[in-house]
Image (cartoon, rainbow, N blue to C red; front, top):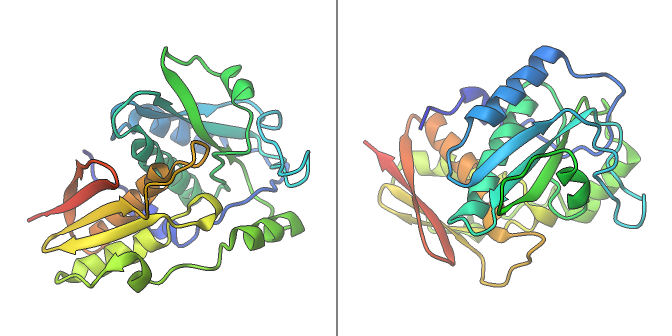
Length: 261
C-alpha cells in the first residue's frame, strides 16, 4: 500500500460535515484530483469510490420531507461495495474517508450520508457491476463560509461536539508513545449520528479495533464507521513516524493495526 498523504492527517482537524453549499463551482484541477483518487485508491478489495459529475440535488432527502436536505453542491461521490464482499463495510469507510479528507485538504466541503439519500437516483448516474450497491455518498462543493442555521441544527441533533474520552473507548493506555497519537486521531473520526461505535484494545505494538456491540443497523453499519476510524488511526500513527498493516478480524472485532518496525 502506498504511504498516505500527510495532508490527510492535517485535514482530520479541519473536516466538518456541511449541508449548505455556495454557488461557486469547484476548479477543474481539484475535480480532476478527486476523480483520479477515486480511480486509484483501492486499499480494500470490493470497496470503491466513484466521482459523479452530476448535481446531487435529486439524491439527497431531508429528515422530514425537504427539511434539512443537503443543497447547492455541484458534484458528489458515491461509495460502493460488493454486497457479499469480505470486510466490505470497513473497506468503504476507510476508502471513503480518504476521499473526504482529500476534499477537505483541497478546501472543499463534504458530508458523510449513509441513510438519507435515494439509492435509485444514484444508480441512474452510475454503472454498477453485478452485486454492487451504494452504501453512502458525500456532496462535493464549496461550503458556505459560515455555518448556516441548518448546519447548526444538524450538529446539535448529532451531538457533533460531544466526543467520548479515550478512557471511554480504549482498554488502558499503550506502552508505545505513537499509540496515543493514533488513538486521538481515531477518536475524532465522524460516525452516523456521532455514535462513535468503535472500541480499541492495545497489545504491545498493535491496536485492535472492534465494534461496541453486535447490534447494528443495515442503514448505518457500525463496521463502516470503524473503517473511517481505522484510516484516522493509521494517519495518527504515521504522523508519529510509525507505519503498519491491517489484519482483518472476525466480528465483533474489525481489524488489528500492527506496527512495522
